[in-house]
Length: 158
Image (cartoon, rainbow, N blue to C red; front, side, top):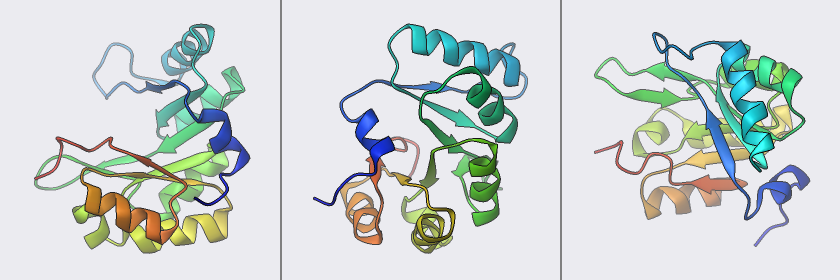
């Protein structure tokens, strides 16, 4: 097993809390997500997962925990793609994310996820979490250099 970046070591065996609320939800918005992140930290969370530049920036101002940043974009046929472009990853890192998560499922791989993973690590210098649904996807992401692998998309893909 390769050496984990320090920020990933802080998360090993610890609780990561997702602070996300979709548009239209009463809790949607950066201020509410920052308050949820503070509550998560007070409850023992070691890290936060957040969606979008505004939420990541607000959470960064509120807590000093590692942030796993994503940007969800809708698929035309339904569902979501997690961090489907290098530009999205760059914006999220600039907002304060320590780690970028992206869709490394088969559909994500068909849209260049493994090359994007390598580029994020090389050009942005941050660890990457591969969101997968199957063992084969996990193995492909590991081979591409993913620092973390999460079964986030299990049950959300065909």
